[in-house]
Structures are given as structure tokens and as C-alpha cells.
Image (cartoon, rainbow, N blue to C red; front, side, top):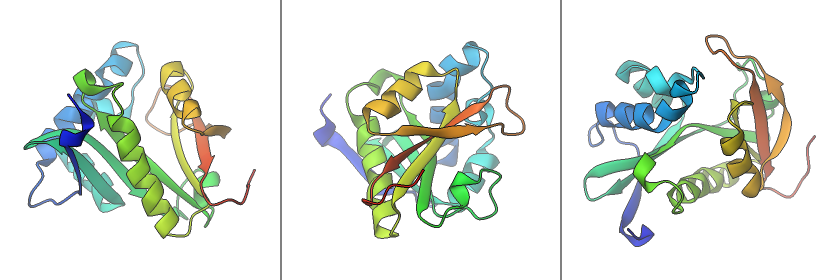
Length: 175
């Protein structure tokens, strides 16, 4: 499998199957659910997947007609519980998944690059995300890509504390 066969497009509800994307999220996050971490993406409904796309700007990665990855970019989140996400210089991403059999070949990097380009086009200095502090493999993945730890957050409905990670993309440093 080479990345040249991957096509990344903006999510289009008329073209891309929410059911297929939700299945991808469930499959990608199953490892965390099996490890006792209640990530929303591991069990969310099709309606919730769509709601998350509607709150942001979603991308899907496809090989042929199969959806093999997704990411959603969110602009400034002034009504968010997380103080870091309220910063007007901060964009963030979530609902990020790559088909398990295609992980570790660079597809995730392509999706994060799309979120980073979008954040830059929105004049953001930081691109952020959060994940369980117990998901050490994910944290290491993000740190290798230039993200640093900002703090912690306890979200409702999950059984873990989240670590907030951020990458400076605009040149100005915010701590």
C-alpha cells in the first residue's frame, strides 16, 4: 500500500457515509475500549459522528471508495470547558482515526497535515488535541510530530483524565 493511492477530501454528507465513518472510528478505537478506556469515538452513534462533523470541518481519507481515515478540525471553541481551547490563536482536532490495518504508514500524518494547513489558513498559532493520559502510545505519536503537553482536562462521560497537547504552527509561543 502506498500513500499515493490515498485521496483526502472535505467531508460531504451527500457523498460520504456517516455509518462507514462511525464504523471506522469504532474499529480504530476498539483497542482503547479493550484496554478499559471509554473514548467517545469507540462507541458513538452515527448521529453523534455527524454532530461532531457539523461543529467543525471534517476530512475523510479514501482508497478507491473505501473510507480509511478521518479527522475533524475545530476553530476557536469559546464555549468549550477547556480553557486552552478557548484561545483565539488555538485550533484543535478530534474525531481522528485511521483504519487499523493501515496505521503506521503515514496516513495519520497526512490527515494531521490537513488540519494543520486549515488552522494556518484560519490564522492559528497552535493546533491542539486531547487524549487519555493512559494512551501512552498515542501521546508518544503526537510528541514525535511536535506536540507538547499543555495540561490536563477531565471531560464528562469518560473514565480517564485527558492530556491536552498542542503544536506551535504559527511561530509565536504560547504557554
